[in-house]
Length: 204
Image 1: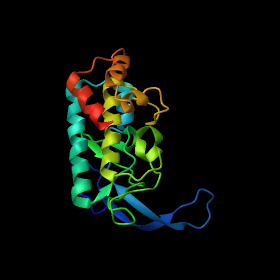
Image 2 (image 1 turned 120 degrees about the vertical axis):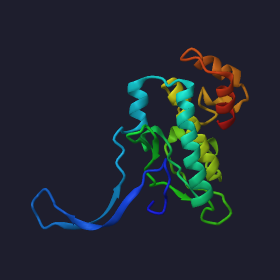
Image 3 (image 1 turned 180 degrees about the horizontal axis):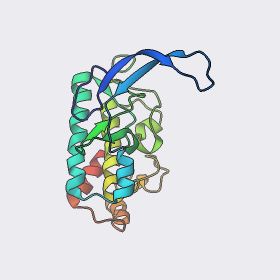
C-alpha cells in the first residue's frame, strides 16, 4: 500500500507501531498501525444510496477514474484488488474516487507465476463466474468484472444479479447470450443507452 501513489487510490501516510490504550485501564499494548489519507465524503455506496441514480455522464466520469486506478495497479504495480465494490471506493473532498481496502489484493502472477489465480476471495455479487465455478481466473479480468457491477449500480441503484452463476435468474440471460432479454428487465428500472448496454454486456 505504501508503495502506491496515484490520484485515485487512497494514499498511505504512515505505517508503524505505537501504544494502544485499553478501555479497561490495563497496561497499553503495542500495536501495528496504518495511517491513511482522509476521504471526507465517505463511501461510494452511501452516495449511490443517498443521491439516487447517476446520470450516464456522471457514471462515465467515475468509471474513467476507476479505469485509471486499475491500469496503474495492474500494469505498474502488478497486483489485482479482488474486492472492488462501492463500500471499498471512497470519495475525497473534490469528489474524486479513491480505491481502498487492499486486504484481498494479490500479485497478478499468482502463486505459481503463470498469471492464474485460484483462491476464492472477494464479495459474492462482484466475483466473476469463473471464480464461482472454482476455476483458475485472471486477476485483471476479475477486477474489470467487478467495476462493471459498480457502474451498473451507479446507473440503476440496484445490483445486476445476485451472483454470476448460470443458476441466477438474471445472470443466466447474459451467460446464455440473451442480453436483449436481460436489458428489457432493467429498462423498467431506468433507461440505459445502447452504448452502455454493449459495454456492460461485454464486461459481464
